[in-house]
Length: 176
Image (cartoon, rainbow, N blue to C red; front, side, top):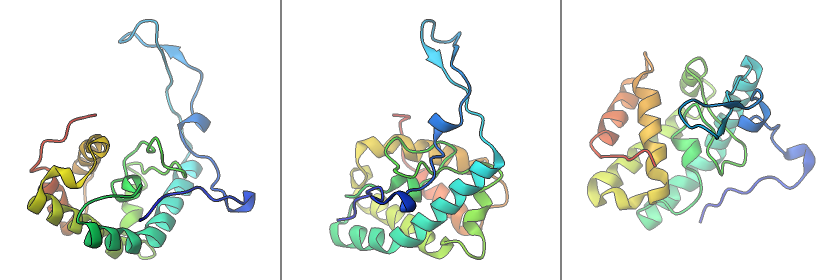
């Protein structure tokens, strides 16, 4: 079963690019008095590194993810962040990958893993439509909600992505 594990050798580690490394000082939030909130400010260089790492993970993991989905008929491993990327890194993503409105189209570029990514998303939809939402662990349902929210607002996506988004939208995905 596919498990995401961070590399063990220093030279293989992805350069940190998650929220902890790109945020300004905490400031109070009017919506939640007493709590500290950070505003993340990322650079285009960080965004491009994140996109490159995401493509790398999709290229190396999609085949194993498809095997998992075919074998078990449900998600069992830790990979949702690479298949349903948003503008926020997943809490457990060892590489803290994310996309932005400016970089997301890179997932459809010539050297991307677009075909493999598409196959996994379509297989996920097939399983969801056949077996229901239990094919994805409850903890991943919020990720799907935010994946839909991010990608539905993105113009000029391929028709296959629009179809996937429409299929996923047929379910009620809670924010958490």
